[in-house]
Length: 527
Ligand code: XMP
Image 1 (cartoon, rainbow, N blue to C red):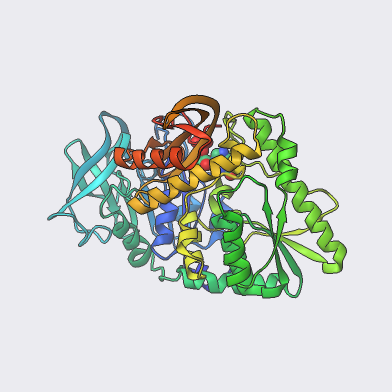
Image 2: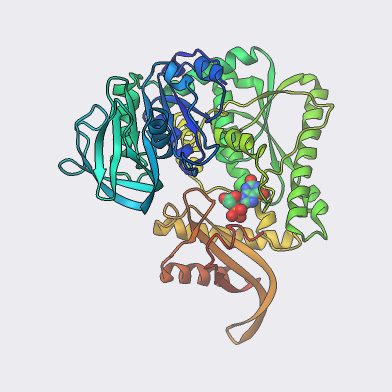
């Protein structure tokens, strides 16, 4: 648990996770409201709850039934610390149960949009509405509170849920059956802001400018006059780490950019331009294309490819680090772009036994002879916060809001064996697709889009001649969380322009297809 007593983290909210798919969203909304929070499993012990120093607690939703045997309960410490508590969905039911209310399975389960009617003007709801006395909210529940606990009053109803919200004003305990954290609840942001600011009394201190200032001061103190090494990939996270460290320690930072031959068109040059030329960051560019392609020769299994790319990256990086140390640079610290969802997920995965579909986190540890101390300046930040920090630090928005690019790069977008010839064709096709998406305004409307190289040949006709050449697939998806995705419904005209340009401008391609698979059952990447 964080022990930082830094002033912008002083007003803090504790989010306890009961397993809802929306739990992380609660924490993100609190942060967006300008208040620091951390999320922990509901069963952390009482001491940690006391030590956290929360000005308010939010209990998330969850899949369990309160009346089931061994259902998750609320630790009494939550109420002992005498701060306001907001229970959402299961959190409300668990709170009702704790104070003697009654919860039952609904005969009418509610999933989706609903309209609640306020029955009281308590300090949580007062003045917040979509139409007189009504709010349009998002419901997702099978159980409901059917008898209020002592000291609470009903504050909102729906026709099928007579206790849609409840409050104990004197204690500042509030419960809502709906989900204020999802954007479908139109006033969700206003309600969360009301809870953390007016009810819990937190200041609006968690802002990008303040975060940068705090982090730069912390990094200066932590690093002193030592040297730091960072693997720069050109992705958002490592770029923001580079910008932060550069601001904090300037010349003491050395970045290593590994060009593995599996990058997008001109990507290496762009990274060098932004960091080395414009920002004056010390970046060593390692041209390792041949090393990667040699390691990948003859390998066509996707997981084997991922492992080889991950391992080769570590080898190249470690060699460079050794060379730098050998030059007497005496590097002490290794910086990494770990972000808060990685921390939450890795804590969860220690408990779970999830089936491995793809080994996404393919970067292993460094060899034993390289013993760096780790710095992870983004460890407590969500992706959207990292992006805002990037903008504050002056990184180009185009880089910050770029679609995600997988660690193994084009290596998993060339089906089967990876060859330089294929990578060169794919890079050109991908660049044409991106240009047209940007020109038409569709780049921002899709979460991820790219081209995929198919190692099969197809017959085409060019002029009077026959062309027997490769196939390129286009993939574009809409998704929020990348766990599920729908193929993007791009306009036919746009697909036509892209396809014509690819076949006309790249003579090695005779056919273009558009991938119309959603996830599940497909995945976003083809491998
Ligand atoms: P899938 O293909 O699993 O992709 O639906 C979900 C998201 O993860 C990205 N992805 C990866 N990222 N290393 C990464 O860093 C990987 O091996 C990897 N495989 C997939 C993918 O681009 C999408 O955003």
